Image (cartoon, rainbow, N blue to C red):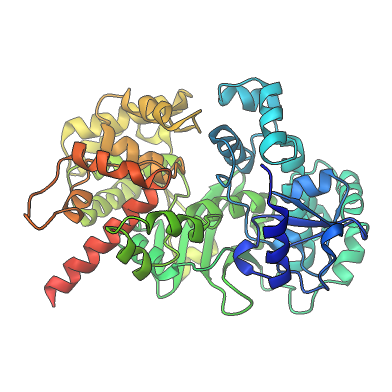
Length: 496
Protein backbone atom coordinates (compact mmCIF):
# COMPACT_ATOMS: atom_id res chain seq x y z
CA UNK A 1 0.00 0.00 0.00
CA UNK A 2 1.38 3.40 -0.98
CA UNK A 3 0.89 6.27 1.46
CA UNK A 4 0.45 9.81 0.14
CA UNK A 5 3.54 11.67 1.37
CA UNK A 6 1.88 15.12 1.44
CA UNK A 7 -1.21 13.93 3.33
CA UNK A 8 0.89 12.06 5.89
CA UNK A 9 3.19 15.01 6.39
CA UNK A 10 0.28 17.39 6.95
CA UNK A 11 -1.09 14.90 9.49
CA UNK A 12 2.15 14.82 11.52
CA UNK A 13 2.47 18.62 11.34
CA UNK A 14 -1.02 18.87 12.86
CA UNK A 15 -0.37 15.93 15.21
CA UNK A 16 -3.79 14.69 14.12
CA UNK A 17 -4.86 11.88 16.48
CA UNK A 18 -7.21 10.47 13.85
CA UNK A 19 -4.16 9.12 12.03
CA UNK A 20 -2.61 7.53 15.10
CA UNK A 21 -1.86 3.90 14.28
CA UNK A 22 -2.75 4.28 10.61
CA UNK A 23 0.85 4.97 9.65
CA UNK A 24 4.28 5.59 11.19
CA UNK A 25 6.94 8.13 10.26
CA UNK A 26 10.56 7.10 9.74
CA UNK A 27 12.96 10.02 10.20
CA UNK A 28 16.03 9.37 8.07
CA UNK A 29 18.19 11.94 9.89
CA UNK A 30 17.78 10.18 13.26
CA UNK A 31 16.95 6.57 12.38
CA UNK A 32 13.85 6.79 14.60
CA UNK A 33 10.22 6.10 13.70
CA UNK A 34 7.29 7.85 15.38
CA UNK A 35 3.52 8.05 15.65
CA UNK A 36 1.70 10.96 13.96
CA UNK A 37 1.02 12.38 17.45
CA UNK A 38 4.67 12.45 18.54
CA UNK A 39 5.37 15.58 20.67
CA UNK A 40 8.92 15.93 19.33
CA UNK A 41 9.79 18.68 16.87
CA UNK A 42 8.40 17.90 13.45
CA UNK A 43 11.19 16.84 11.07
CA UNK A 44 11.59 18.30 7.61
CA UNK A 45 9.48 16.74 4.88
CA UNK A 46 12.57 15.56 2.98
CA UNK A 47 13.63 13.51 6.01
CA UNK A 48 10.32 11.67 6.39
CA UNK A 49 9.47 8.21 5.10
CA UNK A 50 6.05 6.76 5.87
CA UNK A 51 5.13 3.17 6.70
CA UNK A 52 1.75 1.47 6.99
CA UNK A 53 2.79 -0.50 10.09
CA UNK A 54 5.48 -0.52 12.76
CA UNK A 55 6.94 -3.79 11.47
CA UNK A 56 7.69 -2.19 8.09
CA UNK A 57 9.52 0.70 9.79
CA UNK A 58 11.59 -1.73 11.86
CA UNK A 59 12.39 -3.90 8.84
CA UNK A 60 13.68 -0.75 7.15
CA UNK A 61 16.10 -0.24 10.03
CA UNK A 62 14.30 2.39 12.13
CA UNK A 63 14.07 2.20 15.94
CA UNK A 64 10.93 3.11 17.95
CA UNK A 65 10.75 6.64 19.34
CA UNK A 66 11.20 6.85 23.12
CA UNK A 67 8.86 9.83 23.44
CA UNK A 68 5.72 8.78 21.57
CA UNK A 69 6.23 5.02 22.23
CA UNK A 70 4.89 3.44 19.00
CA UNK A 71 4.18 0.22 20.90
CA UNK A 72 1.29 1.99 22.68
CA UNK A 73 -0.43 3.21 19.50
CA UNK A 74 -3.91 1.93 18.67
CA UNK A 75 -3.71 -1.24 16.59
CA UNK A 76 -3.36 -0.72 12.87
CA UNK A 77 -6.74 -1.55 11.28
CA UNK A 78 -6.15 -4.91 9.62
CA UNK A 79 -8.46 -4.12 6.70
CA UNK A 80 -7.17 -0.62 5.96
CA UNK A 81 -5.77 -0.72 2.44
CA UNK A 82 -5.04 -4.44 2.53
CA UNK A 83 -6.29 -7.46 0.68
CA UNK A 84 -8.75 -9.76 2.43
CA UNK A 85 -6.05 -12.44 2.51
CA UNK A 86 -3.68 -10.15 4.42
CA UNK A 87 -6.49 -9.10 6.76
CA UNK A 88 -7.21 -12.71 7.64
CA UNK A 89 -3.51 -13.49 7.98
CA UNK A 90 -3.14 -10.62 10.46
CA UNK A 91 -5.98 -12.06 12.51
CA UNK A 92 -4.25 -15.44 12.53
CA UNK A 93 -0.99 -13.82 13.67
CA UNK A 94 -2.90 -12.15 16.52
CA UNK A 95 -4.20 -15.59 17.47
CA UNK A 96 -0.63 -16.88 17.66
CA UNK A 97 -0.54 -18.76 14.34
CA UNK A 98 3.22 -18.21 13.97
CA UNK A 99 4.12 -19.09 17.56
CA UNK A 100 4.37 -22.83 16.96
CA UNK A 101 3.79 -23.06 13.21
CA UNK A 102 5.46 -21.87 10.01
CA UNK A 103 4.36 -19.30 7.48
CA UNK A 104 3.63 -22.18 5.11
CA UNK A 105 1.26 -23.70 7.67
CA UNK A 106 -0.54 -20.39 8.11
CA UNK A 107 -0.77 -19.72 4.38
CA UNK A 108 -2.27 -23.18 3.84
CA UNK A 109 -5.09 -22.24 6.21
CA UNK A 110 -5.72 -19.23 3.99
CA UNK A 111 -5.69 -21.23 0.77
CA UNK A 112 -2.55 -19.62 -0.69
CA UNK A 113 1.13 -20.50 -0.91
CA UNK A 114 3.76 -19.18 1.48
CA UNK A 115 5.59 -17.29 -1.26
CA UNK A 116 2.39 -15.61 -2.41
CA UNK A 117 1.52 -14.60 1.17
CA UNK A 118 4.95 -13.04 1.66
CA UNK A 119 4.48 -11.10 -1.58
CA UNK A 120 1.06 -9.85 -0.43
CA UNK A 121 2.47 -8.73 2.92
CA UNK A 122 5.30 -6.88 1.20
CA UNK A 123 2.88 -5.26 -1.23
CA UNK A 124 0.26 -4.18 1.32
CA UNK A 125 2.23 -3.72 4.54
CA UNK A 126 5.85 -3.40 3.49
CA UNK A 127 6.86 -6.12 5.97
CA UNK A 128 6.99 -9.90 6.08
CA UNK A 129 4.60 -12.02 8.21
CA UNK A 130 7.52 -12.96 10.46
CA UNK A 131 8.42 -9.29 10.98
CA UNK A 132 4.83 -8.43 11.90
CA UNK A 133 4.71 -11.28 14.42
CA UNK A 134 8.10 -10.32 15.90
CA UNK A 135 7.20 -6.63 16.22
CA UNK A 136 3.96 -7.58 17.93
CA UNK A 137 5.86 -9.67 20.50
CA UNK A 138 8.62 -7.17 21.18
CA UNK A 139 6.24 -4.21 21.51
CA UNK A 140 4.13 -6.15 23.97
CA UNK A 141 7.26 -7.03 25.93
CA UNK A 142 8.31 -3.38 26.17
CA UNK A 143 4.91 -2.39 27.51
CA UNK A 144 5.15 -5.12 30.12
CA UNK A 145 8.61 -3.90 31.13
CA UNK A 146 7.40 -0.33 31.54
CA UNK A 147 3.90 -0.87 32.91
CA UNK A 148 4.35 -3.77 35.33
CA UNK A 149 6.85 -4.92 37.91
CA UNK A 150 6.87 -8.52 36.66
CA UNK A 151 10.23 -10.25 36.42
CA UNK A 152 12.00 -10.30 33.06
CA UNK A 153 11.58 -14.07 32.96
CA UNK A 154 7.81 -13.73 33.30
CA UNK A 155 7.73 -11.04 30.60
CA UNK A 156 9.89 -13.05 28.21
CA UNK A 157 7.59 -16.07 28.47
CA UNK A 158 4.43 -13.95 28.24
CA UNK A 159 5.71 -12.32 25.03
CA UNK A 160 6.44 -15.69 23.45
CA UNK A 161 10.22 -15.88 23.79
CA UNK A 162 11.64 -19.32 24.54
CA UNK A 163 14.41 -18.02 26.78
CA UNK A 164 15.53 -14.84 28.48
CA UNK A 165 18.75 -14.56 26.47
CA UNK A 166 16.85 -14.33 23.19
CA UNK A 167 14.43 -11.88 24.82
CA UNK A 168 17.27 -9.63 26.01
CA UNK A 169 18.88 -9.65 22.57
CA UNK A 170 15.62 -8.80 20.80
CA UNK A 171 14.89 -5.91 23.17
CA UNK A 172 18.38 -4.47 22.78
CA UNK A 173 18.23 -4.77 18.99
CA UNK A 174 14.85 -3.03 18.76
CA UNK A 175 15.24 -0.32 21.41
CA UNK A 176 19.02 0.02 21.77
CA UNK A 177 18.64 -0.55 25.52
CA UNK A 178 18.52 -3.54 27.80
CA UNK A 179 15.22 -4.47 29.49
CA UNK A 180 16.64 -3.30 32.84
CA UNK A 181 17.59 0.10 31.38
CA UNK A 182 14.11 0.48 29.89
CA UNK A 183 12.47 -0.25 33.23
CA UNK A 184 14.66 2.27 35.07
CA UNK A 185 13.63 4.98 32.61
CA UNK A 186 9.91 4.03 32.56
CA UNK A 187 7.46 6.95 32.93
CA UNK A 188 6.40 7.48 36.52
CA UNK A 189 3.09 6.07 37.69
CA UNK A 190 3.14 3.05 35.41
CA UNK A 191 4.12 0.36 37.90
CA UNK A 192 0.88 -1.61 38.20
CA UNK A 193 1.68 -5.16 39.32
CA UNK A 194 0.51 -4.45 42.85
CA UNK A 195 -1.59 -6.52 45.24
CA UNK A 196 -1.45 -9.57 43.00
CA UNK A 197 -3.05 -7.70 40.07
CA UNK A 198 -1.62 -6.63 36.71
CA UNK A 199 -3.13 -3.56 35.06
CA UNK A 200 -2.51 -2.79 31.39
CA UNK A 201 -3.79 0.10 29.31
CA UNK A 202 -5.27 -0.94 25.93
CA UNK A 203 -5.51 1.98 23.55
CA UNK A 204 -8.14 2.51 20.85
CA UNK A 205 -9.30 5.20 18.47
CA UNK A 206 -11.80 7.91 19.25
CA UNK A 207 -14.69 7.93 19.34
CA UNK A 208 -15.19 4.78 21.41
CA UNK A 209 -18.76 3.90 22.39
CA UNK A 210 -18.10 2.01 25.65
CA UNK A 211 -21.62 2.74 26.91
CA UNK A 212 -23.06 1.21 23.76
CA UNK A 213 -20.87 -1.86 24.08
CA UNK A 214 -21.97 -2.43 27.67
CA UNK A 215 -25.61 -1.82 26.74
CA UNK A 216 -25.26 -4.56 24.12
CA UNK A 217 -23.35 -7.00 26.30
CA UNK A 218 -25.33 -6.59 29.53
CA UNK A 219 -28.51 -8.43 28.48
CA UNK A 220 -26.39 -11.07 26.73
CA UNK A 221 -23.95 -11.66 29.61
CA UNK A 222 -23.98 -15.37 30.49
CA UNK A 223 -24.86 -15.78 34.18
CA UNK A 224 -21.92 -17.07 36.18
CA UNK A 225 -19.47 -16.41 33.34
CA UNK A 226 -19.87 -12.73 32.48
CA UNK A 227 -20.87 -9.71 34.52
CA UNK A 228 -21.64 -6.11 33.61
CA UNK A 229 -21.79 -3.88 36.65
CA UNK A 230 -21.75 -0.13 36.32
CA UNK A 231 -19.00 0.72 33.84
CA UNK A 232 -17.12 -2.54 34.46
CA UNK A 233 -17.12 -5.79 32.51
CA UNK A 234 -15.85 -9.03 34.07
CA UNK A 235 -15.63 -12.59 32.85
CA UNK A 236 -13.96 -15.90 33.63
CA UNK A 237 -11.17 -17.14 31.39
CA UNK A 238 -9.19 -20.35 31.12
CA UNK A 239 -5.95 -20.43 29.12
CA UNK A 240 -3.31 -23.13 29.45
CA UNK A 241 -2.64 -23.43 33.20
CA UNK A 242 -4.39 -20.17 34.15
CA UNK A 243 -7.99 -19.95 35.32
CA UNK A 244 -9.39 -16.74 36.72
CA UNK A 245 -11.39 -13.53 36.26
CA UNK A 246 -10.40 -10.54 34.11
CA UNK A 247 -11.86 -7.08 34.46
CA UNK A 248 -12.24 -4.17 32.02
CA UNK A 249 -13.23 -0.56 32.55
CA UNK A 250 -12.59 2.69 30.68
CA UNK A 251 -9.48 4.71 31.47
CA UNK A 252 -10.17 8.13 32.93
CA UNK A 253 -7.11 9.95 31.62
CA UNK A 254 -4.57 10.11 28.77
CA UNK A 255 -6.93 9.47 25.89
CA UNK A 256 -9.39 6.72 24.95
CA UNK A 257 -8.41 3.33 26.33
CA UNK A 258 -9.58 0.40 28.41
CA UNK A 259 -7.86 -0.72 31.58
CA UNK A 260 -7.39 -4.47 31.73
CA UNK A 261 -6.89 -6.06 35.15
CA UNK A 262 -5.81 -9.65 35.56
CA UNK A 263 -4.42 -11.72 38.43
CA UNK A 264 -0.63 -11.77 38.41
CA UNK A 265 -0.86 -15.54 37.83
CA UNK A 266 -2.09 -14.72 34.30
CA UNK A 267 1.31 -13.33 33.25
CA UNK A 268 2.33 -16.41 31.15
CA UNK A 269 -0.77 -15.94 28.95
CA UNK A 270 -1.09 -12.17 29.15
CA UNK A 271 -0.41 -11.60 25.44
CA UNK A 272 -3.23 -14.01 24.58
CA UNK A 273 -5.53 -12.24 27.02
CA UNK A 274 -4.72 -8.83 25.54
CA UNK A 275 -5.40 -10.10 22.01
CA UNK A 276 -8.66 -11.70 23.17
CA UNK A 277 -9.83 -8.49 24.83
CA UNK A 278 -8.95 -6.37 21.79
CA UNK A 279 -11.06 -8.72 19.66
CA UNK A 280 -13.91 -8.83 22.18
CA UNK A 281 -14.26 -5.05 22.22
CA UNK A 282 -13.19 -4.40 18.61
CA UNK A 283 -10.44 -2.05 19.79
CA UNK A 284 -8.61 -1.99 16.44
CA UNK A 285 -11.58 -0.65 14.48
CA UNK A 286 -11.23 2.63 12.60
CA UNK A 287 -14.53 4.35 13.49
CA UNK A 288 -13.90 7.44 11.38
CA UNK A 289 -13.40 5.47 8.16
CA UNK A 290 -16.40 3.23 8.88
CA UNK A 291 -18.72 6.13 9.76
CA UNK A 292 -17.61 8.08 6.70
CA UNK A 293 -18.85 5.38 4.34
CA UNK A 294 -22.00 4.37 6.22
CA UNK A 295 -23.04 8.01 6.63
CA UNK A 296 -23.31 8.32 2.86
CA UNK A 297 -26.55 6.35 3.15
CA UNK A 298 -29.39 8.67 4.35
CA UNK A 299 -30.90 5.70 6.19
CA UNK A 300 -27.83 5.16 8.38
CA UNK A 301 -26.52 8.73 8.64
CA UNK A 302 -28.72 9.77 11.62
CA UNK A 303 -27.82 6.61 13.57
CA UNK A 304 -24.12 7.06 12.77
CA UNK A 305 -24.24 10.61 14.11
CA UNK A 306 -26.17 9.54 17.21
CA UNK A 307 -23.87 6.62 18.03
CA UNK A 308 -20.34 7.67 17.06
CA UNK A 309 -17.61 5.13 17.61
CA UNK A 310 -19.89 2.10 17.44
CA UNK A 311 -18.10 -1.25 17.58
CA UNK A 312 -19.03 -4.81 16.67
CA UNK A 313 -18.73 -6.83 19.90
CA UNK A 314 -16.59 -9.88 19.33
CA UNK A 315 -16.30 -12.78 21.73
CA UNK A 316 -13.86 -14.29 24.17
CA UNK A 317 -14.36 -17.89 23.05
CA UNK A 318 -15.62 -18.84 19.60
CA UNK A 319 -17.22 -22.07 20.73
CA UNK A 320 -19.05 -20.27 23.54
CA UNK A 321 -20.40 -17.63 21.15
CA UNK A 322 -21.45 -20.21 18.56
CA UNK A 323 -23.37 -22.28 21.11
CA UNK A 324 -25.10 -19.16 22.37
CA UNK A 325 -26.05 -18.23 18.81
CA UNK A 326 -27.58 -21.67 18.26
CA UNK A 327 -29.50 -21.38 21.54
CA UNK A 328 -30.71 -17.95 20.41
CA UNK A 329 -32.47 -19.28 17.31
CA UNK A 330 -36.12 -18.15 17.36
CA UNK A 331 -36.05 -17.00 20.99
CA UNK A 332 -35.65 -13.58 22.61
CA UNK A 333 -32.35 -12.22 23.86
CA UNK A 334 -33.52 -12.74 27.43
CA UNK A 335 -34.55 -16.31 26.67
CA UNK A 336 -31.24 -17.13 25.00
CA UNK A 337 -29.28 -15.68 27.92
CA UNK A 338 -31.31 -17.71 30.39
CA UNK A 339 -30.79 -20.93 28.42
CA UNK A 340 -27.06 -20.32 28.06
CA UNK A 341 -26.79 -19.69 31.79
CA UNK A 342 -28.52 -23.02 32.50
CA UNK A 343 -26.15 -24.77 30.12
CA UNK A 344 -23.11 -23.24 31.83
CA UNK A 345 -24.41 -24.06 35.29
CA UNK A 346 -25.13 -27.70 34.49
CA UNK A 347 -22.28 -28.64 32.15
CA UNK A 348 -19.61 -26.01 32.87
CA UNK A 349 -16.85 -26.13 35.45
CA UNK A 350 -16.28 -24.03 38.57
CA UNK A 351 -13.74 -21.23 38.34
CA UNK A 352 -11.22 -21.58 41.13
CA UNK A 353 -10.13 -17.95 41.11
CA UNK A 354 -10.19 -16.35 44.57
CA UNK A 355 -12.14 -13.44 43.09
CA UNK A 356 -15.10 -15.71 42.44
CA UNK A 357 -15.72 -15.65 46.20
CA UNK A 358 -16.42 -11.92 46.14
CA UNK A 359 -19.47 -11.90 43.91
CA UNK A 360 -17.52 -12.15 40.67
CA UNK A 361 -18.29 -14.68 37.89
CA UNK A 362 -17.48 -18.20 39.07
CA UNK A 363 -18.15 -20.59 36.16
CA UNK A 364 -16.28 -21.67 33.03
CA UNK A 365 -18.21 -22.37 29.85
CA UNK A 366 -18.47 -26.04 28.86
CA UNK A 367 -15.82 -27.40 26.51
CA UNK A 368 -16.85 -29.18 23.30
CA UNK A 369 -16.21 -32.58 24.88
CA UNK A 370 -18.55 -31.64 27.75
CA UNK A 371 -21.54 -31.32 25.40
CA UNK A 372 -21.09 -34.18 22.93
CA UNK A 373 -23.27 -36.56 24.96
CA UNK A 374 -24.97 -34.04 27.27
CA UNK A 375 -28.72 -34.07 27.93
CA UNK A 376 -29.15 -30.54 26.64
CA UNK A 377 -32.85 -30.90 25.83
CA UNK A 378 -33.52 -31.25 29.56
CA UNK A 379 -32.70 -27.53 29.93
CA UNK A 380 -35.94 -26.62 28.19
CA UNK A 381 -35.43 -26.43 24.43
CA UNK A 382 -36.51 -28.37 21.32
CA UNK A 383 -34.73 -31.69 20.94
CA UNK A 384 -33.65 -30.74 17.40
CA UNK A 385 -31.76 -27.70 18.73
CA UNK A 386 -30.14 -29.78 21.44
CA UNK A 387 -29.01 -32.25 18.78
CA UNK A 388 -27.57 -29.38 16.72
CA UNK A 389 -25.44 -28.29 19.69
CA UNK A 390 -24.20 -31.85 20.30
CA UNK A 391 -23.40 -32.26 16.61
CA UNK A 392 -21.63 -28.89 16.57
CA UNK A 393 -19.61 -29.80 19.68
CA UNK A 394 -18.57 -33.07 18.06
CA UNK A 395 -17.41 -31.28 14.90
CA UNK A 396 -15.29 -28.81 16.88
CA UNK A 397 -13.87 -31.57 19.09
CA UNK A 398 -12.94 -33.61 16.00
CA UNK A 399 -10.96 -30.67 14.62
CA UNK A 400 -13.24 -29.63 11.77
CA UNK A 401 -12.30 -26.04 10.75
CA UNK A 402 -15.80 -24.59 11.19
CA UNK A 403 -14.61 -21.96 13.69
CA UNK A 404 -11.26 -21.18 12.06
CA UNK A 405 -10.46 -18.04 10.11
CA UNK A 406 -11.47 -18.86 6.53
CA UNK A 407 -9.98 -17.65 3.21
CA UNK A 408 -13.14 -15.56 2.68
CA UNK A 409 -16.59 -14.90 4.12
CA UNK A 410 -18.50 -17.26 1.76
CA UNK A 411 -16.19 -20.12 2.79
CA UNK A 412 -16.78 -19.35 6.47
CA UNK A 413 -20.55 -19.35 5.95
CA UNK A 414 -20.42 -22.56 3.89
CA UNK A 415 -18.44 -24.36 6.61
CA UNK A 416 -20.98 -23.41 9.27
CA UNK A 417 -24.13 -24.08 7.27
CA UNK A 418 -22.83 -27.52 6.26
CA UNK A 419 -23.94 -28.69 9.69
CA UNK A 420 -27.66 -29.53 9.94
CA UNK A 421 -29.51 -27.06 12.15
CA UNK A 422 -27.29 -24.06 11.36
CA UNK A 423 -28.88 -21.70 8.87
CA UNK A 424 -27.71 -18.47 7.29
CA UNK A 425 -28.76 -16.25 10.21
CA UNK A 426 -26.79 -18.27 12.74
CA UNK A 427 -23.77 -18.57 10.44
CA UNK A 428 -23.69 -14.85 9.66
CA UNK A 429 -24.03 -13.95 13.35
CA UNK A 430 -21.18 -16.30 14.27
CA UNK A 431 -19.04 -14.91 11.44
CA UNK A 432 -19.82 -11.36 12.53
CA UNK A 433 -18.89 -11.78 16.18
CA UNK A 434 -16.72 -14.91 16.54
CA UNK A 435 -14.79 -14.80 13.24
CA UNK A 436 -14.57 -10.98 13.19
CA UNK A 437 -15.81 -10.67 9.62
CA UNK A 438 -16.62 -6.95 9.14
CA UNK A 439 -18.89 -7.67 6.16
CA UNK A 440 -20.99 -10.46 7.75
CA UNK A 441 -24.68 -9.56 7.73
CA UNK A 442 -27.60 -11.67 9.08
CA UNK A 443 -30.11 -10.33 6.57
CA UNK A 444 -32.89 -12.59 7.82
CA UNK A 445 -32.82 -11.09 11.32
CA UNK A 446 -36.26 -9.85 12.34
CA UNK A 447 -34.85 -6.85 14.17
CA UNK A 448 -32.88 -5.69 11.12
CA UNK A 449 -35.94 -6.10 8.93
CA UNK A 450 -38.03 -4.08 11.40
CA UNK A 451 -35.41 -1.34 11.36
CA UNK A 452 -36.00 -0.94 7.63
CA UNK A 453 -39.80 -0.71 7.76
CA UNK A 454 -40.80 2.15 5.50
CA UNK A 455 -43.71 4.56 5.54
CA UNK A 456 -45.99 1.82 4.24
CA UNK A 457 -45.30 -0.23 7.42
CA UNK A 458 -44.47 -3.20 5.22
CA UNK A 459 -41.85 -5.56 6.66
CA UNK A 460 -39.10 -6.11 4.05
CA UNK A 461 -37.94 -9.63 3.27
CA UNK A 462 -34.46 -10.89 3.99
CA UNK A 463 -33.73 -10.84 0.25
CA UNK A 464 -34.75 -7.19 0.04
CA UNK A 465 -32.58 -6.31 3.01
CA UNK A 466 -29.61 -8.20 1.57
CA UNK A 467 -29.86 -6.22 -1.68
CA UNK A 468 -30.19 -2.98 0.28
CA UNK A 469 -27.07 -3.83 2.28
CA UNK A 470 -24.78 -3.99 -0.77
CA UNK A 471 -24.00 -0.28 -0.51
CA UNK A 472 -22.73 -0.75 3.06
CA UNK A 473 -19.95 -3.17 2.09
CA UNK A 474 -17.41 -3.94 3.45
CA UNK A 475 -18.85 -2.68 6.76
CA UNK A 476 -22.19 -4.46 6.86
CA UNK A 477 -21.57 -5.83 10.37
CA UNK A 478 -21.25 -2.24 11.62
CA UNK A 479 -24.36 -1.28 9.69
CA UNK A 480 -26.20 -4.10 11.47
CA UNK A 481 -25.09 -2.75 14.85
CA UNK A 482 -26.34 0.72 13.94
CA UNK A 483 -29.70 -0.66 12.81
CA UNK A 484 -30.09 -2.70 16.01
CA UNK A 485 -29.20 0.33 18.13
CA UNK A 486 -31.63 2.50 16.18
CA UNK A 487 -34.40 -0.06 16.63
CA UNK A 488 -33.70 -0.24 20.38
CA UNK A 489 -33.82 3.57 20.61
CA UNK A 490 -37.15 3.70 18.80
CA UNK A 491 -38.58 0.91 20.95
CA UNK A 492 -37.54 2.70 24.13
CA UNK A 493 -39.01 5.94 22.82
CA UNK A 494 -42.30 4.19 22.15
CA UNK A 495 -42.52 3.03 25.78
CA UNK A 496 -42.30 6.55 27.18
